[in-house]
Length: 148
Ligand code: ATP
Image (cartoon, rainbow, N blue to C red; front, top):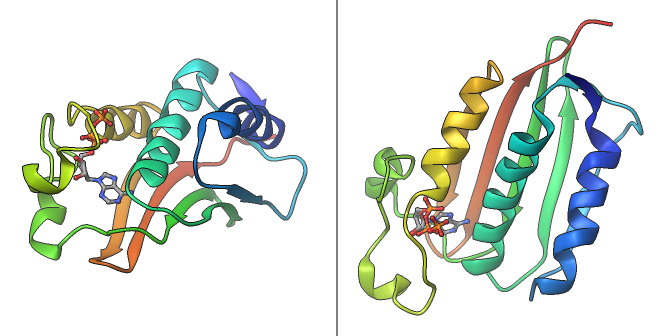
């Protein structure tokens, strides 16, 4: 359904922030941004990306909405451990986890990003990664904007 995702993202951040070690900064130029979404899945997608940013970094997490003519970019940026270039092609596969040793302390199944990819595609969009080891990661979800 067509929904204003700005208050939805706000609400989601308020709900998860108390459980996070890192602060989440939310940046949007507009207070109203309408997208066709399945609200529950969209929220799950946000939480997967934010949880990872919280797990694999120890600094501020930036969530930025970037409006373009026909698309909307949701950018989740962390200044964490990053993902080595040679691992990046596999990161959205089911059960894939980078280097078991570095992940031993931070539990997980390796399903999160596979689900995030599926949800992005179910919304007619896609997900991308830009990351540099030891610098951080940027996950970009690209969604079509809904017509008025
Ligand atoms: P979960 O299914 O509980 O989320 P997970 O974090 O292991 O477990 P994914 O979310 O699919 O699974 O992530 C897969 C792997 O990608 C992770 O194990 C981690 O190595 C790497 N990864 C994901 N997000 C980040 C990030 N923001 N920074 C660094 N590495 C990341």
